[in-house]
Length: 116
Image (cartoon, rainbow, N blue to C red; front, side):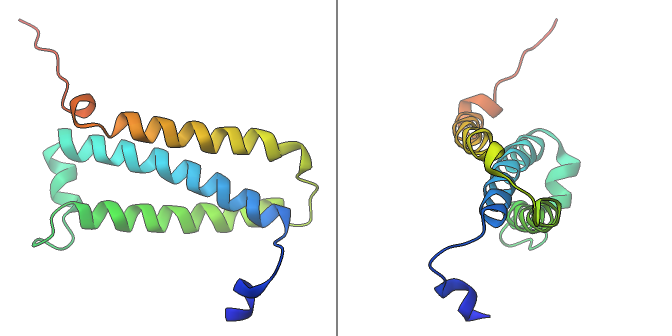
């Protein structure tokens, strides 16, 4: 298994699957963070280890979603020419990082509107 990490190059489909999975996982993470902050049911559901709190469930959900998406994308792109998707997936990944950063700022997910 360790020989996989000592290669000089990876297949393009594997690299694109990793970038796509990471970008989608970032979106899943900020949406889950928003739900945990807003909905008590999600906060209780995400508390897998009570001493740690809901962060344990968020990390587990992010870990599982990355690997499920990675395996699915790797099987989808296996043996295909992915050169046309390079730029689009890289831009999607960079935008996902920016969106994740903005949407996890405390004043964003604690914002509320009170209607009288």
